[in-house]
Every structure is written in C-alpha cells, then in structure tokens.
Length: 511
Ligand code: AHR
Image 1: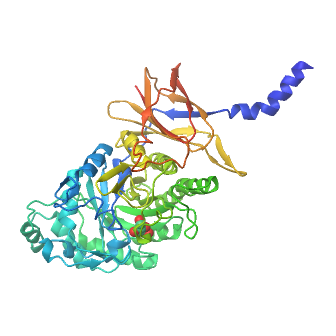
Image 2 (image 1 turned 60 degrees about the vertical axis):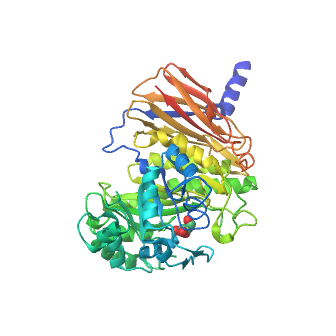
C-alpha cells in the first residue's frame, strides 16, 4: 500500500521534480568555421538627440566639467572600462537630415541647424566629424558613421568617405588637413541610410535596394569598408528578403535590424514605476529578439549560405515613457533592473547567434533610451545596463561555446516565459565564462552546468542583483546596484551547481 502511494506520488510529482533545476550542457569543443563572438556585438549608439551628444558626451572645452577637447573625462573613463568596441553616429533619424559639411572647420563659421526629429532644438554644430572621430580615438572605439541617404546625395556621402579615410591628395583630404587632421582616421563601418522604410525616406524595399546599390558603388570598397544596409523593423521579413535578393553581394557587408522592447507605442510604461504585467510584457518583447534573429538569419542563409553578410542589430533596447518634466523629444528615461534583465538576456541571444550577428548597437549610450550612463550637470551615474555590459565584456572576441538547456519558466497570470538565459565562451587564455540571467522577479532557480570536453579546478564570478525589478541607481544613490562577488557556485565532479537569485545576472569564470 505504502509502495503504491510512493509510486503514485512519484508519477504525480515526477515531472515537477525533474523541473526543479535547469540542466545546462555546455560544449567545450566548438568546431564551427568561425565561432568567434565579435566584440562589435557590444557596440553602442550616440545620436544627436536630447542630451546624448550636447550636455552628455560633449560639454565643450570651456566647461568647468573636466574634459578632453570638450568630451567629459568621466564618460571617457567609464566607457573605456566597459570596453566599448564601436560607436554609431550621428543617428538614427537625425542621420538622414545631417549634412556633414555643416560640422567641420572653424566652429564660429559653422551654421546652426534645427534638429527636426528630436525636440526641434537649435544645434550649433560644434560637435561634428572631427570631434566625433577624435572622441572615438579617446574611447578606443571604432567609429560607425551613418550616412545621409534620405536628404543627402551620393556625392556628399562619397566625399565624407574621402574626407575621413583618404591619404591620397584630393580636395577632401586637403580639406581635412586644412582642418587640422593630417592622417585619415581608422574607419570601417558605414551605414547607408537609417530606417529607410520610415524616418529615412518612407521608401519601399525595392526602391531602397536600388538606392543602396548606387550609394554603395560610389562610396567604394576596400579591405576595411563595411557597408551596412538600412534593415528591417522587428518582424518585417519581406524587407530582409528583398534586400538580400536585390543587392549584389559584392556591394554589401552587413544588413541592419532594429527592434525595441516597447510594450506598445501608444501604451508604454514608466521606466521605474511599472507593474508586473508591464514587466512581463517588456520581457516578452525583449525575448522576441531570439525569434527575430533566427528568422532573419534563415532568410539570409537562403541567399548567403556562407554567412558573408552580417546581421547588424544597430538599434535595440527598452523604450519607456520619458521622465516626468523632461522634454518628450529628448527620450530621457531612467534605467532599472528590468533593463539589466533585457541587456543580459539580449546579449546572450546575440552571443548564441554570433555566426550571423556580428555587430549590435544598444540604443543609446548616454542620456537617451536604455543608456549605460546618465548625467546631470557635473554628476554622472552608471546604470544597471552599464554593469551588465561591463560584466559581459569577457565575451568580446572569445570563442562561443554552444549551450543546450531546458529552462524553467517564469509564470505570470497564466502566461510563461523562459526564466533562464545562458551563453558561454572561452577566451584566449582558456578561461571559460558563462553568463546567466534569471528574469523571474520572485523565484530563485537552481542550475546545474555540465561540460562536454573538459573540466575545471576553480569557479568564481560576479553577480548583479537587487530586491526589486523596479530598483535603479539615482543621482542620490548612485551605487545602489553594482556588481558584487558571487560565491554561490560549487564545483563537484566536473559539474557546477548554483542557486540563481531572482532578478539577477551572473557571470562565472571557470579555470
Ligand atoms: O533611437 C531613437 C530612434 O529610434 C532612432 O533615431 C531611429 O532610428 C529609431 O526609430
């Protein structure tokens, strides 16, 4: 009788007991042709929008805020520590209104312009091409210039390429030299228009493909030239298909994708004062990235089976209501543990798809949308998203290790999402890093990691966590959320087990 009861209990509870922990299998023997997680997956985006450039990165060289040629020293130090690999500029929607020749030469001769997309403010053009490219050198980041297709000309973009990259004698390199820069800058990444289906000109995919062919032809090619086509919005698969079909592959190195974790464009949420329903919906939108990348990649595979053309997710992140009392056109939002969950899970998706996703740019770097840095006069805070980016920089240019697991779920109101997300890599010194996110706002989850093809002697790590998903760093309490040492992982018989607290990001280092 007792035995029967036990069997019955095992049958009823068995499936739940099996789900009591997430079993993660990590393959240390990746033999893919190019399994590298490109460092450019960790790139950023800086638009002339609100206080991203003016009052953010750039305060001018007469400012009392310590700066180098007008760029804040505290921002330079923070982004270097985070290892920012590349920075996209000057937009966004702004890029298709920007005429680069307005932003070169003596500052008092530069014309003022009105930023028609973002707040209608007047900008004096004191931050232009030379200032941006010199700033990238200070940051140790590669520039990614976004060319104007919407309201510019082919000649204008071809001239920009000459001005910035040519060492031969020609009118554009002479102009650069006259403006005080002798040698060209080191530029590879060029965007040809932005959101051509919308703010970049409301074009059809067919029409834009032809425009792209023309611009790309006259920009020229070369070993460094990496030309990125304006790509699809979220699940517009037809856009990717049309571009892949119509653009000769000798003219293109990357195709973009934009996807924001926005609940609903007409019904966003506060950045910090949100409900669990809103948290769940934000995470649903963020995790959709996996499906989007998978499906866009499958289309690209049809036309480019050798994966020569990269998928460049050059705008991604959480988008919420602006902070109360701020200009709605400036897109200034706080950054909470929800953003850390979005960043950790999204970067894991990119790492796991690194065969096709070879660049991504978080929108945006300073004071706009899901920023890594917020400033207020001389004050600066690092957001939870900054800390995730800094913790994950160990994956930059490391070898991706495939992971397989059946996750436990985060359940809410009868709906469920994968609670756990994982990616792993091996760096040049042989250290294996595993980044794990638990998006569940309440439950701790247990994980067991099994390694195929190797074992380890030590395990250490860092954790970013907080009591509530709504928690954030403020100017009054800037270090409320910061990475701490994580001692909760145990090695036993080659496997690693750990309890992953709710709302947490952990990066383990195994030697
Ligand atoms: O990042 C803000 C805006 O979002 C960009 O300018 C545009 O490309 C996108 O729609």
